Length: 576
Image 1: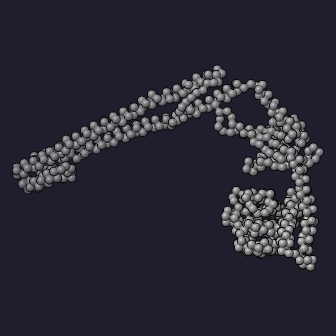
Image 2: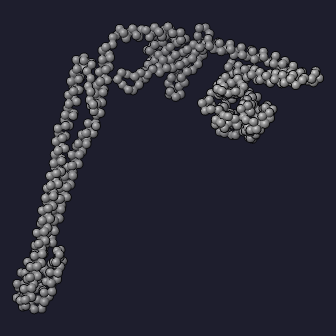
Image 3: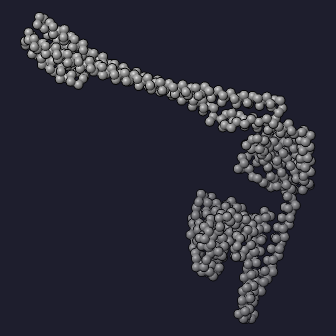
């Protein structure tokens, strides 16, 4: 328990007991007062009235005013009846007095009245004795309860007096001795308080300080300097530009590669705030443009095009946060960042060569494929000659392979456009129906082969701003995939809806569906779902994504594994 809580609890408990003692004492005093008032108000007054009636009774025969005095005190007594039997005695007294008023000289009535008054007085005197006993019992109880409460208060105060000073003074004494040891450079000294109070926190902080002092005392400056030189030499010999900044964005180091591409001298960079350098240097400004953004908005890597080594070069930028855990502490501390620029120019050149090769090969494939298709058409012409059944099967097989090869060649040509950045997009006002009709007709033969029905629900009331040729290609590809993966005798739904000033196309199939872990990957280039037996290059969805993205739209998919998939893409509505 915390010291503050202990003090609050102890003093608060003592305070509560004192309040309880005062309340109990006040209650019993009030009870004694009530008992005393009962004696004084009820019984004492009756005795006083009885005495006055006895005095008036002596003068009844000789003084007429005595009758009035007796009557007055009798009336007061009738209103002050409080004890058992007092009511009957008072009524008897009234009866005898009424008779006396008629015969004032009747000694028998006077004697009876004296007896009645004596009876009333006797009853009240007995009540006084009884109530005095009750008051005594109340006083005795008060003495016992107040004594017990006072004893408990004394014991608690005594316990606090014995324990509290030692609980506070002893840790302070131990801490003082430990501080003296640290002052004497005995950094191995530690304090150990088992409690989880303020002294426990103080001991933890003290031990952390002692650990740091011990760490600093045992380290040597020459080791630190050698380690610093090693790191600097390593950074300077890297072939990629590296810039290091501290938590205040001040430049700590920059290797020769970073100086060369920035065109700055070391004294112009080291020790300066990097945002101040960026004001006069376009490259530095481009490099640091996103390090001031929140972490969620700051991309981990980014590609930059920089003129270096006499040519346009490509660099991949990565910003690495430097976080450390100080000795003896639990909270990680941010101490700066390192900006790495990896030279990926050779990889870009290889990628460009690959793209050019794919484009050249794909283009060159088109001519022999067209020749093969023409030859197949001639073979199928009965005017040239008839084919037997085996020859027809061979021709059909070659025909199917030629169509598939032509589709792959088209996809390769499209992907080379995407990779080279030479996609030509012609955004024009376009109707929705022709695009859908083209895509449905292109897949009608394949759908009929599997007895699949294609239902269309389109909104023809608006125009879209799109490249109709590439949009039709995307929709054709989505329907083709739906036909390929749907079961026979099923239905494919092609639908358009207006959503937030856009037209949303959707293609829903009734196939196996896509597992959740692959939904985010199916639009990646060359990706194919593991275990699938369907033919394909893994490029169709990737090309579709690029075509839709180039038109300012987006494409995505939803799927329930085992129940089919729905592929969506949206394009802007044409605004006149």
